[in-house]
Image (cartoon, rainbow, N blue to C red):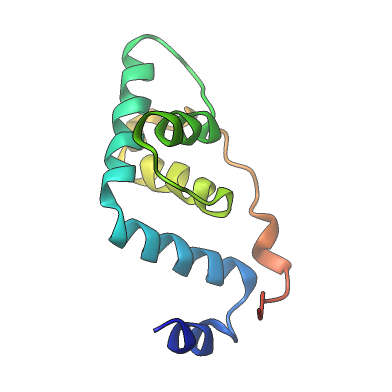
Length: 106
């Protein structure tokens, strides 16, 4: 499966590779996103106006013992804001610097 995946992603941009990596991780561990949403909504309920997706992931890593690549954290924030548009601005989204990077052909 790894060889097959690497052949399929070899010709994708680095950003597309990371999007695939996020989708695969999310499919394998959907509970991470559930915890991400729960933490974010709890912060919002407490009156927090802005927060860091990295901060939430660090809490999940600490409390739930998940191993989560830093590469996919921005995709959790973007998914949250797509799923909860009423909380636009809670995460400050930066431009993905991978958009113009060459593929990672390990």
